[in-house]
Amino acid sequence: MAGRRAVGDATAPPTDAPSGAAPAGGGWAAGRPAPAEQDAEPDPESVARTICLRLLTVRSRTRAELREALSGRNVPDEAATRVLDRLAAVGLVDDLAFAANFVEAKRAERGLATRELARQLRGKGVDDEIVDAALSDLDAESEHATARRLAERRLRSMSGLEPRVQIRRLAGMLARKGYSPGMSFQVVREVVGATDSDPDVDPESM
Image (cartoon, rainbow, N blue to C red; front, side):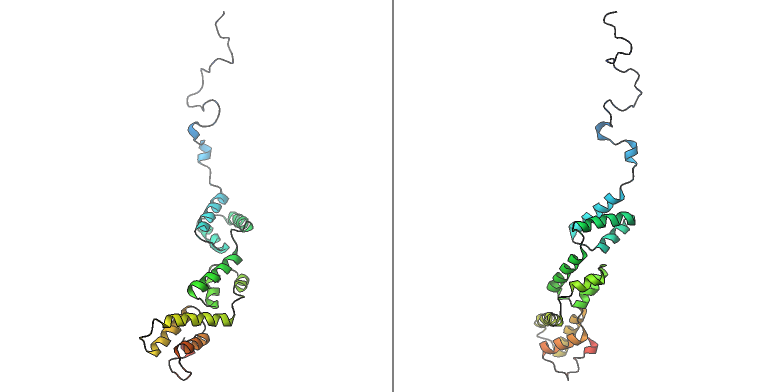
């Protein structure tokens, strides 16, 4: 009969779609993920990359520092290694550059001695070979000059103190910055005007 739709007509709207079925056109409405996607575990490498980039945004880090951070977040070692290798390949992780910049900054800001710089770099997980390379341009002459500048600057704030007090405080300051007893002894004598016979200038006590 004219006007009646034939059975199986492709244009006929479905009448028996189950309740709750996904809408025509595929996918879940309003951008909601399917249940399987909701339950999926995050990709370890994506997690590792996010953690590393967030830390590197704050300041540069050594490879060992980043690995420690990833370990603390339970990132598998294999995933951590792959991410750190990729970051190293693009120059975002470079222990040699880190060490060189660290030495330059700490010498300028705090006047740290070579052995204290080495101690701090090793504490950040930098290999001995890289530490030696970063410190290779620092010799005894430059070390002495830095120590003297520190002592002279500190001495200006000690004008009202007795020489023995000045000596003790200057020696303690240089020791905390990593200068050897011998160099501290020499620098203190120079800036305070002490002599070898002064009992308060004892390199073994610095």
